[in-house]
Amino acid sequence: MYIIGFIAAVYLFARKYVENEPLKKYLDVSANWVNEILNSYKNQEPKHLFVRLLKLSNKIIFYSLLMIFVTMLLPKDIEKMFISIIAPITVISMLLSFSIKWIQYHNKTLKEYFFNLPMLGVLFSPLIFYYIEKYPLDPNININDIFIPFKFLIDKIGIFYFQLLWLAGVLAFIYFGAVVIAFPIYYILYGCIIVTALFIKFTEKYISKNVLDVIVGLIALFTGPFLKMFS
Image (cartoon, rainbow, N blue to C red; front, top):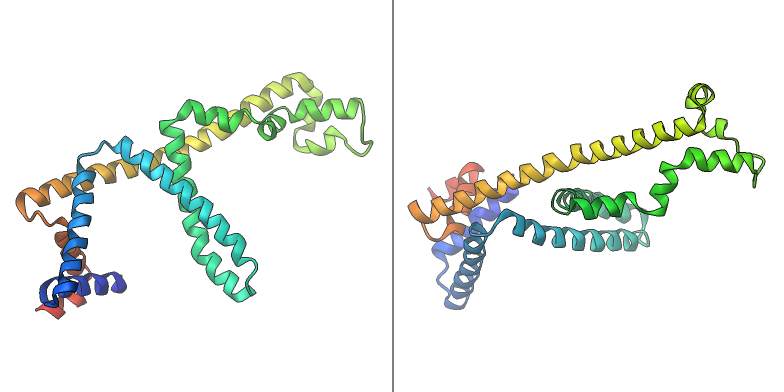
């Protein structure tokens, strides 16, 4: 928090007191560029912003995983330090990517996650192991050893009814688990986008067209101690 406040204070100081013409011009151009982005942001539909966020999240995932692979070649202490930084970014990006895909591209995502060989293997594993045991390729494989918690149920209702229960249970668990993860992330982010857009519109109408200065000023205000630098 103090670091954010310090950066905000430095920005406000530079905007107010820097007289060096090349540097002042650079600051003004940079601020105008950010304000243009904020201005375009407030007029866009959240769904369009989510498309851009999805692309950004996928890029971050790719480069984060690449960086994690590279850090594995470094000494252990350095590897741990970098992974402690990169891993949370990767996880957040994965959650964002999954949530956006699950809500906005639901049918396509269902096919992607449920209609692939590994998932089909899990869904139909009771029957697969049953036939492997019945026509053994490996005498050490026994379905009762693999599905020990369900042995009583398999013996009582038979493998085919158990397969139906297994299929329904696994599908329901994965589907509703995905809903529990995706819905809060997506709609909280959706709400944040709406609130931010309204804030930008309010700021431009009643406070200043330079939204960036207002935002940085509020950051400096709420981070407290650094506001004294300008008193």
